[in-house]
View 1 (cartoon, one colour):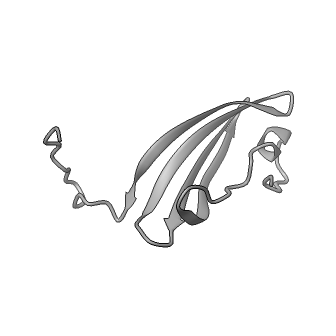
View 2 (tube, helix red, strand yellow):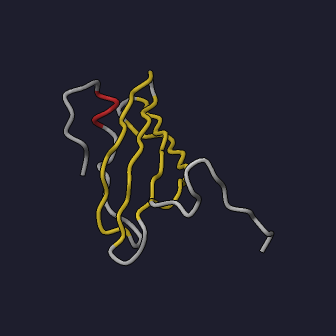
View 3 (cartoon, rainbow, N blue to C red):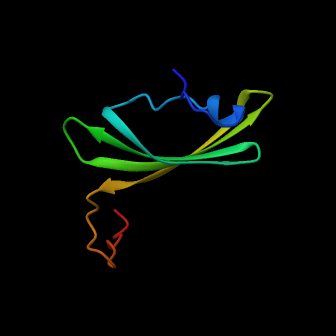
Length: 91
């Protein structure tokens, strides 16, 4: 499935957000085109667990996806309090 967008062709080549793994649904948050790259941020929702947020950078050439970088985000609601962090104890 592809996103149906009335925007430059490079955006139309970005696959629609299909739930994968244990995600049951997803919401598109950000979609930005920059030359031959498209930046996509989305939230995935699990049926039995916390939601999460990821960002992908998709490179498109000649209307074909040639590279995808995935930056795995965090759980929504994150365990850390706003402005705080979680200590990594190495284990």
